[in-house]
Picture (tube, rainbow, N blue to C red):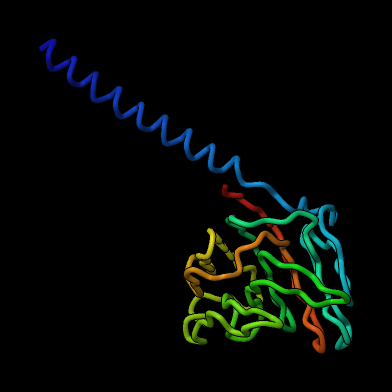
Length: 210
């Protein structure tokens, strides 16, 4: 009887220990995510070019009332290289994008890997402006299955050296292997020139990797 009780006690200790380790690991992972927007002000971001970037109802709102001559960009103060970044977005009108490892050349040219955000069926693809153009373009059928028009959508971008993966509402929409664009750069939110624009972003968080 004592042997059985000891065995049961050992199993319980192992299970509880494993659960404690799991909770600790999850807590550590969660705490390592850093918010890049507090829902109140655009601290840590700088506007470039045309368009208006304002905070409305806890979200970053980018607008142009008419088709602007120049791109409207909102650029993070800090640069990032290996990372996970997640955020919510709502695309109301016009073509937008979220750049990783980006850099800006005056007056309004954003270079880097642009993750497309658009009411059309290209959201979640990877495009390089002023460079290779489309690098990884999802099918319209795939995008239409996971994209929610007129609603908040969630995007997760993982970049580790030359490997980049984009997930839209939990579905992988684009992937790069051994991509040459690996230098640290800014996050950049985009308002496309020549379009009337309305796009929103919120809950932007980054998890940096070594």
